[in-house]
Length: 167
Image (cartoon, rainbow, N blue to C red; front, side):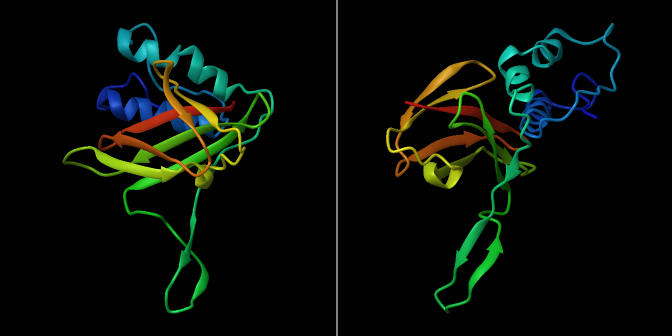
């Protein structure tokens, strides 16, 4: 259950809940009074881009990305999280080859985290590259090849939520 529109969540925390809900392909259950919801929260709940990703016809649930530790001591294959406060989530969506991307900052304070992630680590491996769009606003971030880095700043308790479509 998400609590978008309930008292106590910042706008960024509400966006984080909506992004993870969409990536997980979960049913939408809300715990708020829709008669009393503020316009900003209502707009999040009705965001067509986010709803489209959640309702993607493939119906495949997203996953959190873990990295393989390339330990110089030769201990390989141990799965570790990339960074302490940053989580990367992906979900295959239509059209074929497209991917929803969630980069969540679970940090609690300070400034935004500058996140640099290799596109191929997000499953973006098509040699032709991808167009990446930020889904809350519909803004195109740019075109990226698998060997390029996506650079985003994610505020504490916030999320970058986008989609990548093959070029």
